[in-house]
Length: 141
Image (cartoon, rainbow, N blue to C red):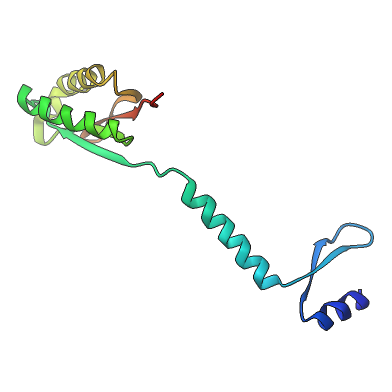
């Protein structure tokens, strides 16, 4: 061990223990700071290659009329074509919570209209004053 430390010191490098459990322990003479730098660089490169998931939101009221629905559906199609996930929700304010069925029907209609562009990841679910549904884009072949 002292010989290895002397060799590393002589070269101006660090002695790094690779496998401490082995008999005798395995060590390597290297520039440790440079090794850490290279490792961070590799991790950063891998991270940049990973795809980032974008979630776009579309908000409806329980009594959204046809024109507004069509307008929002066009945006939803654009978001799914761009590869973003879609979070569609119906927001119930005040006493409009009594129209839960209308909200669900609206979201299911949207899911049916967007069948060609994406698949439903989570069916409409009531969370507090919102009914939320997630749609993931279909993979392009």
